[in-house]
Length: 459
Ligand code: SAH
Ligand code: SF4
Ligand code: F3S
Image (cartoon, rainbow, N blue to C red; front, side):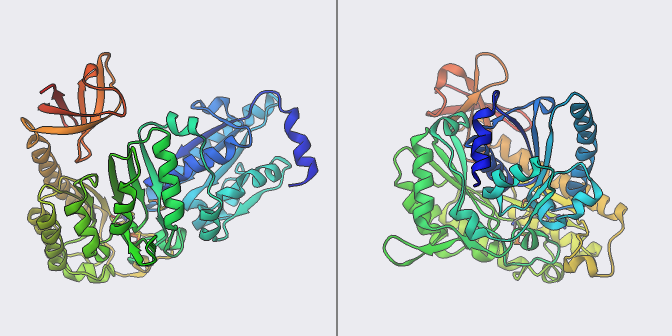
């Protein structure tokens, strides 16, 4: 840092304000928090009101065309705001971060000249310096890959910030993807798979626990591809890591997401059997039930491989809830292929699921394939699939009624006198506020169900 920059700071009368908007997956949520932490140490405070901001950061998602295009409509709105502010003599810097930043780089500034800086998902620790430059009118594009660098310099929240974020937290343990599913941009936007060290992960989890966090969700694009050198000097996978994290005082619950079926090893399945703090919920996307389409997607497993895997997992932990992701209308998908997807859904029985129409992504092998599927066929298939998935999800929700379950109380409810906890299966449960303080575990009987949430009462 130059001396000039150091002299800048004391002159700052009121703190600068940043408005952070997050799109996409949980990893972006985690990254936005880290950007918030990096900016906090530069004196920025966060604001929920975009009009108050001196800096707007959009943390973007490139996964489907719609997600990527949202950013440009938001930038259109921000152009007006920046103009108004500038007329009033106030500064507004606009930054685009995340996967669109990585995928499109300087093209973003060409399409939306209102943008001052473009910063890829591996370069957030360089944010303060990039801002100084942007403030001098230099347009910044920082999209070099350096995930090791990111993990080395991850901004750390102070205890107050951890507390303010509540009793559940995300913790990235792995980033990037080497799977190259033919529909997906993630290997290009997040780079190749890299794991954080056990030491770093344990240190971060301990800090979170000391700040009052009771439940940690480990994150990775392929979280179960995480591997590292264990404290016993042996090579560890996610299963071993979970056992280590379970020893941290204060941690009552562990989860992880997102997993790839090919990386579910024996140790991880054993953790579901033997580790009480590991919650009985697994997000395990299959995408399609058709062997032909699975092959074209480069998923490297078959319909039956997936079913056998689910069976092994359920043998280890009978009450585990399975959640999934599905894509309809991948190039070449016939009615018969789609029926195979419907079949696998019926065979597995999902507690929760996300389903999407295939979106052609520039630079992916899928985009080059002929036999793209017409929009109306995709719509029709998606409707049928979602109807089945909603039915299964509703069945699962209603199967809770009358059961006694353990909750982690997470936050105040929307209505006075209520609090909201979460079941082991990720369902929000509304209870009387007297049933427990935020951060406490409590047992309740499920007395009723809404569409997405449950109601619990004292036992
Ligand atoms: N790493 C995770 C998921 C990444 S993206 C995994 O491997 O499961 C989240 C979901 O978005 C994917 O599971 C997939 O269902 C969906 N998705 C990814 N690319 C897509 C595309 N081009 N069109 C439609 N859906 C897509
Ligand atoms: Fe994308 Fe496939 Fe990697 Fe998941 S495993 S991030 S779907 S390429
Ligand atoms: Fe989207 Fe990037 Fe996550 S493309 S889903 S924000 S990894």
